[in-house]
Image 1 (tube, helix red, strand yellow):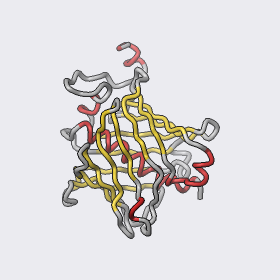
Image 2: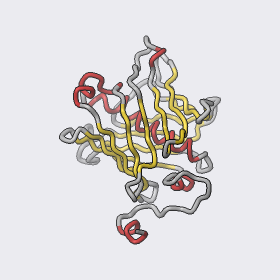
Image 3: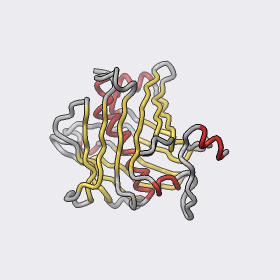
Image 4: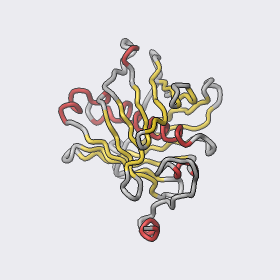
Length: 225
């Protein structure tokens, strides 16, 4: 198995105590690079998640209903399953149907992140009239980090800042490129998220989910407009 990991360029699994299976990778990572591929024939969005050495860390799959995709588009609910190199499901990102209109502050976007059935934390969108804002919460609901986006989203290169819980210090960012704008350079949508190395691995898992949520809401809409 270890030979296959090396052959397929998977990140070797570090030895970490008191960590849910598959999340030990997160203790050695401070950035994810994600390649998203949309497969309309199979009604799937597929994600390849790598570290900064271009080693595979996870794969993820979102299966969707075509009618829901057409009707709800970027506000659609999703259930994304994240797998390690052994094809074990190690993370689950569950997003209920919500809204992103500033006129509906009671029904904004949220995602619950679990690992092998254990709650890692939540993403909760905060009401803002002009620029998007999300709270990264731990399993108790306490806000640990904030993510703030720009007022003007270009769909070519978009950067969201990852901030400390008081909003004063930038500790990382989410950057996204849209493939349909520059197809010759990038075959699929690419995005990345960075964060402190010493951040709790549960919150790193929530940040990975946050990057997918942000791309689904703000970058994905151009495919259907």
